[in-house]
Length: 197
Image (cartoon, rainbow, N blue to C red):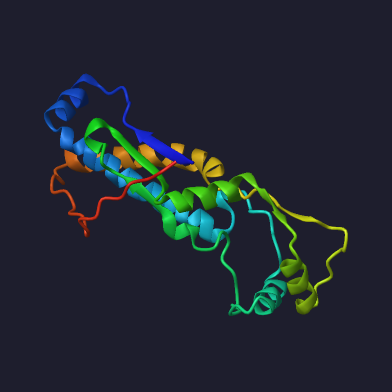
């Protein structure tokens, strides 16, 4: 999933004239809103409750550690909600001059994993998985053939947050420009991100 921030705001004739003379202001303000939105979504993932809606708790950390060790993996002290997916959120500014900035997953694999997490899924219980549970000392019913992983929505609960905050970011940036802060900040990186769906 991805969110599109589009400039479509009825302005006073004065502002319309000012902006028609300075279209780069809108593009810059939209980029600012895209950067802000990306930060909000990342923070939502890291908090474990995007948009104030907590993710469904999966396996307690102490059980997860035992299971990881049973699989021969390194155990961690804690496990981040959604793993490393927070690092895979970005914004695409390539259409900012057309009045559009898109926030979403930065790779096809992030789309695949993120979509799977957001919709929920079933994992087949293999002999290897059953053996790992046994080795970890975690009770696992013999007749269980699937594990249901509940949906952990990220983008949907963040929509209202972005819908309220992104226009304010655009407005604040435009007001800054109108008040004389015409120097736009330079990007710290020349890398251009693309988001996928």
